[in-house]
Image: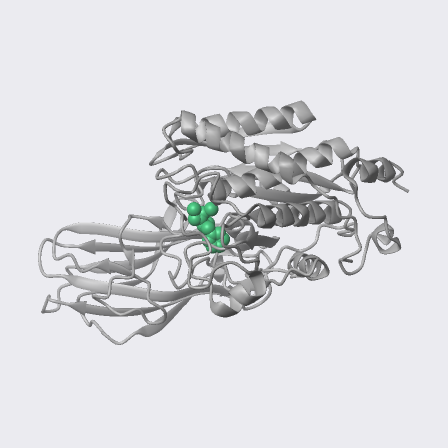
Length: 478
Ligand code: PHE
Ligand code: ZN
Ligand code: ZN
């Protein structure tokens, strides 16, 4: 069975093939093949990305030449290795951006295992940890797979996303434009965004909508290597969000950003307590010196393990249901604690401004309150499973106004946009305001089987403010 495997293993110095791996099913065994991928190679890829940034004004950001140069370079490596590559072009308010999607020929087209990383940096720096590390590690894993000579049970696809830093635009664009049948063929999406932080932690995504099998395989891998790990609820802060929202199993790894390492975390992981995991997060100093090579090398091997493991995982003969479990929230970043991430609309409403309190946490969506003619909105797309027997949109809202009387001058409309038509579920106005957070809920069952956009649309007239403050939104189905 799969005799090519032997060649493969010698090519990448993998551990022995085990009985459990050949069985192809069952729980993800830690003893499954673990390629020993090259830290030297991944470091060389990072140096290349640094050189590209240096040659292009110090960044690799959306709409800047360093992004396209990064994409062209990664594409050339993949093409030379035998991948079928596709460049997907889309526009953003920062300029044109591109996704790069690479398919390894072969494997069951009904069962696709995807691995991705965003390739863009912020404009303030070269983005070597964020996300040169994820980009370079996924590239090295893909190249190692190509040179291994392995054949896989499942079809392997790798992606480098554009415009993640503008709000996950590339991965959202990919999923929005992928035909439903192709979405349903994806059994797993694994995301790597920042995997070599200079003061590293090992955070495994724990925000799955369906199934924890890959999360559990990742933690089992770290445990087997004696690497302590923690879960992180990433709240849709990276490119797995649109896959997760659709109902595809996801996992991912994050070595930490702007938050501070605690004493307990420094005890188990080393590094410096009281210091950010990545003090250069989104800054000009996120250069080639801003990477912990040990963490990068460990995570590269972890990524290789996950690719090798799921290349051969038996997902069954039928496409697994991608229906999220009853009760899970299909909205990403529903309480706005990750800022505007996963929401589209006008910029500004999603804020941690203390002028109005959040219901929970510190962030909320504060629409209106300008006292001048204005229109603002926030929106998010969501797919209501075809099998839903109940579906609802809920949210908490508080309102206050400087208007008086019974004329609605300022309004907030709660809408569902489906196939270009907006339906208003509820209108709030300056009439009958209530400064105590109150929950409202509306059925979305009429939209089952459809991808719709939930939108909160505010219009204010020329004087006397009305504030509509939203928090803790949810779309749940059963
Ligand atoms: N997506 C964030 C960025 O690129 C980083 C991040 C990854 C944050 C994973 C949380 C979890 O800036
Ligand atoms: Zn970033
Ligand atoms: Zn990132």
